[in-house]
Image (cartoon, one colour):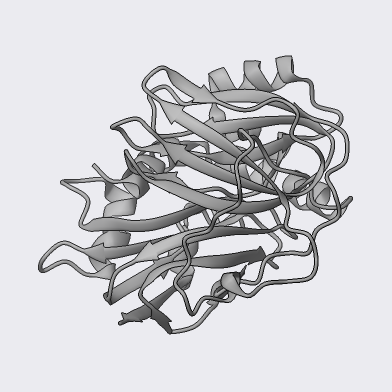
Length: 305
């Protein structure tokens, strides 16, 4: 069972809460516009060794210092987040030592939200916690995979949400202090998300490379890259998201989790040659029952040798 299915299983199950969403989206927008993007999350200190191809921009040496690096580890017993992650631009590698899929959705609690309030709301309906936090993205990872990422984080209380486990779970941690000044990494692929489009290349080189994700829209967005089961199409995927009847007609290739308006983060994507569709799985907050993909938020891409 693939990662996007897990996201959509919960999302579609809770579409009956769409009126909740409509009441909440205004708060999301107001909070996003009220201040600078808030930070990210954890990981144990390690050297920021990105495995981007030799021609990748991330291999170009810069005179500016590299962001300080930490590692977050998922395992059979849970997730380990290192202590002492400072505020600023930091490198967070997420590694999945488990055999199952895990999601690393990095979120900062707003200053007026306590961890107790977040926990109580999360236990009742995880989706209702979206307006309580700023969302910074993060990868979904199959067992044995890892992904280098970069995030700009500010002091405060953070949660690392995993929507692959049942029930959903989170790990909290604190960010304090200041990281050394560092230049943002040079991305090999840039993706800008808005309502309702992806601004990104249509042709992308194969291999592991560093992608920059920016949400320039007014609502939360995410990015899934999928291919289809034999004989299935994008229309079948959209129909399935509304009905959830039968097996999902697509296969996940890569996924970058939901980001609040105004947020930029970076993450590694490893992709083989082929034809894919990039799409947003989030609800369309401006409609009653729709999804962003209903509004045309998808793009056909080709990955070449």
